[in-house]
Image 1 (cartoon, rainbow, N blue to C red):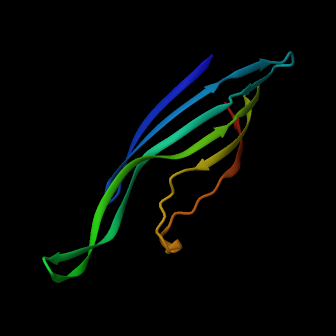
Image 2: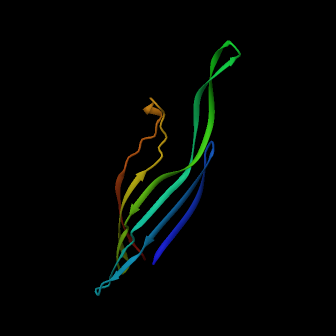
Image 3: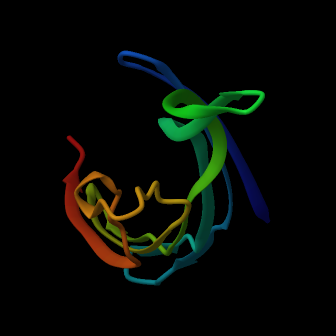
Length: 139
């Protein structure tokens, strides 16, 4: 069976940001004869959210034939964008009260905010693979 997942969140700091998540996964479960259970859950997610930043541009003011002046205009911009895609395949091996968990994932960031000629003010991000591992015992 294919599972669909949807989520939403609100983040509050000096401004409010909204996030939306959508995903799909398919659980594969196999029981072995010696009391082991293996579960694999291939998943794909898309993360979206608002991005808020200040856009600055210069506007020239002139009147008829008089020379104009340039004035910097700062404008607050808020956009809902795709922030990242994620592919993962959590693996759980369970026996009795024990679970061993391994979660490999591949993340592809999107729509990074960049400031022309200012890498120190720009977001940095690149494709990344990471793995989370753990164990759990139930009493």
